[in-house]
Amino acid sequence: MAEERLDFQCKDCGQVFSAFLREIAEHNGKITCPGCGRSFHADLGKDGVAPPSSGKVQS
Image (cartoon, rainbow, N blue to C red; front, side, top):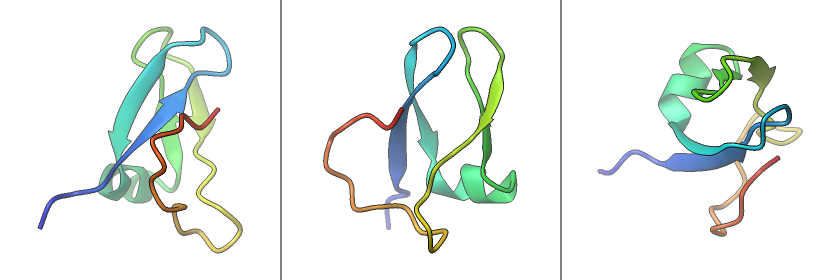
């Protein structure tokens, strides 16, 4: 089974990057931008579940 990846766009520097859903969960929803190093909370929806992948970037 392949792990699901989600795409994010950094709110500070605008860099787009991917993160594994499992890794996001292990860090309690916090992700760090590889471009600027800023951390922010990944929006996984009100139920704590990632929305279906639509190919769109989450910001």
